[in-house]
Structure formats: C-alpha cells, structure tokens
Length: 90
Image 1: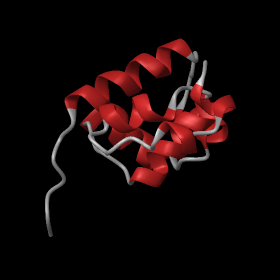
Image 2: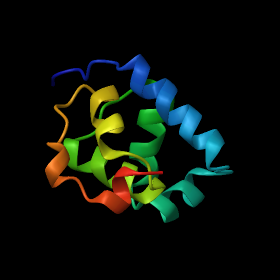
Image 3: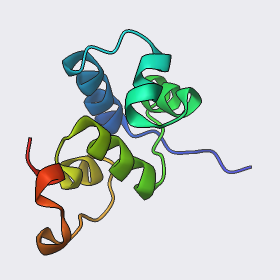
C-alpha cells in the first residue's frame, strides 16, 4: 500500500478555515461540506490531500475561492473563465 504524502500547507489552511467557520465538531463540518468525517480528520490532523474533486467541493461549501484551495493542495488551478463567479469570490 502506498503511503500518502503529507501536505503541511494544506493542513494549515484547513485548520485556519475550521477556525474561520467556527466548526465545533467533525459532524458539523461534514454537514456543511459534504465530506466524510474521516476525510476531514485526515486533512486536518494528518495533512492528507484528498482528490481534486473533494478539494473543489470543500471550497464551494465554504464559499471560498476554488483556485486558492487547489493551489494550496498542489493541484493545477481551474482557468479563470471556467470558475463560477459566485464560488470564486468570498
């Protein structure tokens, strides 16, 4: 089994978002983001990088710029003309 690389910048960004949005539990974060609690735990505590689609889902749910999250997760950003304006701006 291949070990997943740690992404400390992503881990810091997730923890900062956790505080900004005032999540009190993984269940609450799961309800808001639609990501499973185990995924959120791995991102927050282990610096685990989920799939590109999950990163997009996380950003959209938090109404934060998708490309900012993709870049911090070390994925290529979406071309600006393809990003939905309502999910791109805060």
